[in-house]
Length: 121
Ligand SMILES: Nc1nc2c(ncn2[C@@H]2O[C@H](COP(=O)(O)OP(=O)(O)OP(=O)(O)O)[C@@H](O)[C@H]2O)c(=O)[nH]1
Ligand SMILES: [Mg+2]
Image (cartoon, rainbow, N blue to C red; front, top):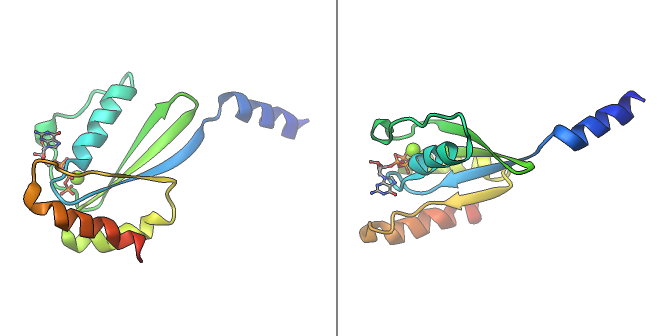
């Protein structure tokens, strides 16, 4: 009976959780994207001032509920020495958002190389 009820409860109220990695070069706008997503989708979230966002050294985690899904975003640091950590998270995630600063044309090829890195490791 307990199993039946807990199954029913989970079916009705529990959200499916998905882990989404946010990758991209340093300064591409990953943390800004995460903050904007949280502000847009989480009703009671008062977003932090965008000017207060500094470069990410570790990991920012943000949760956003969309319909019956709960998206758990992992925003990793994009600096070169941190890129080797990307593939540690790659195997655990359900999806990847790759952020490119389209105005920074000089770094587009560097961005492409960094994008290819976890795909080939
Ligand atoms: N104009 C403009 N500036 C942006 C946009 N997104 C981010 N920025 C600016 O770009 C800079 C870097 O943004 P972050 O979100 O910290 O970049 P990041 O990819 O998280 O960088 P790391 O944490 O170092 O990997 C900040 O000064 C932001 O305000 C955008 O869509 N438009
Ligand atoms: Mg960041």
